Length: 260
Image (cartoon, rainbow, N blue to C red; front, side, top):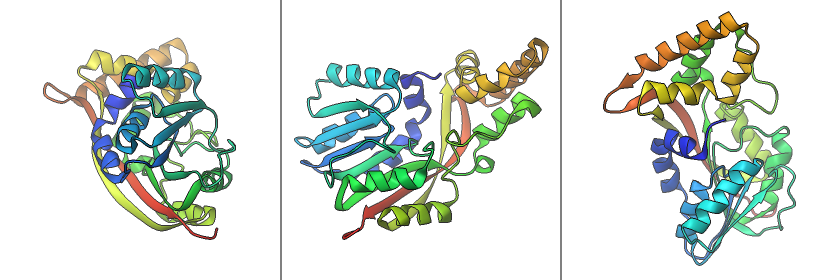
């Protein structure tokens, strides 16, 4: 499993687009869905002060890291909750903005999840999401799958990072949940896997999906897959930028409709 710091570094180019889209103002109450290690929550907290920000994530490890980081930065308007945004009983109409950086693609029941999130937002509240476009448009996904070989399997329901890739289907999903004024912006930025091949290799081989595939292989098969993976990472390394791969994401903005 990747560390929170690795994940934040991986997405540093995406974060610039995401932060620019927040439009969080002083006094806002903000919800950060799938907050991970809490970088996005802390940025939102600085923008919202003296307002408050709640970060929610299903990973106890990530939530604990986020709490420590907020304490170290002496942010007193942040709180964290280990829970599932699909089912957590948010106080009705209590947030002005909801944000999520690649944290909404894994709901077992997306209709229920987004309806639940909408119930916690005030009428007119903003929703700002980053989600991956299709695997075919993401070089990192294609390259890692090719390196791992034919043993790669389609993701199981609730574990698909590309579940919101279809813009038309995602727009319908959000409209059913009570959102309008939807906009999809195409974000094309590199993902960063490390300053050198060795560190990138150790990180990527421990990705949850990669580790699951490797566990299905014989020792010889896994060794060959890891050799291919290292070679792939080496082909994407340069001395200035480290190991990077192309990616494409949707930056989605919407508003909670009145009277829903």
